[in-house]
Length: 248
Image (cartoon, rainbow, N blue to C red; front, side, top):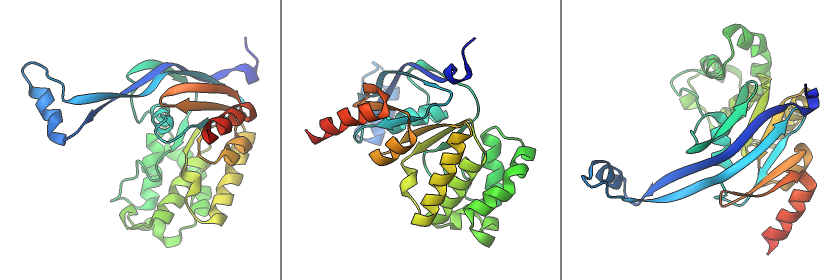
């Protein structure tokens, strides 16, 4: 029986993701109905055999240049995308902050979307109601909470999405660059709340171009380059190699 701090909570094994790139939208249909199966696309492997583990008590940073596969990996972990091949095992509830407001129904009010999105993430109505006051207070958008989300500004969407994701107290929190959105006071409030979640046992997986944030929040770091794993290990050691690579 492994100790609690040795328990593997997330296990990714030999993960691959293929995208078919078409020059024109019509090419997809031409390929579909071509009698001799002619290809009109080119293949792009966004991830190539990515494997890693995250144990209880750890937080993982994911770094790399644009196009390295970071967001694709996070989308697969969140269940938004399906891998071409490979396996993922994750224990517990996952709350994704990948695109602000993703999963929101624009026709529903902010309040209705709290219940709608929370249910999709696997929470019961009773569990959402227990956390509702904190979610509303953290978002701090006043009477707009009863207005359809389609009328929200980008900032209000950010506030509601952040508040919902980090106040549902997930087992695993996925964050992709969105810490750069919103006013400075709100960002500080979010960072403080994330620190609280980590101290209470939530596993953070953070994609960011801010190496300072990666070093501050992540005990280990995965460096991706063109879909391949370049380095995986203790954050300071990986960041040192990445900085040297980036400068050359």
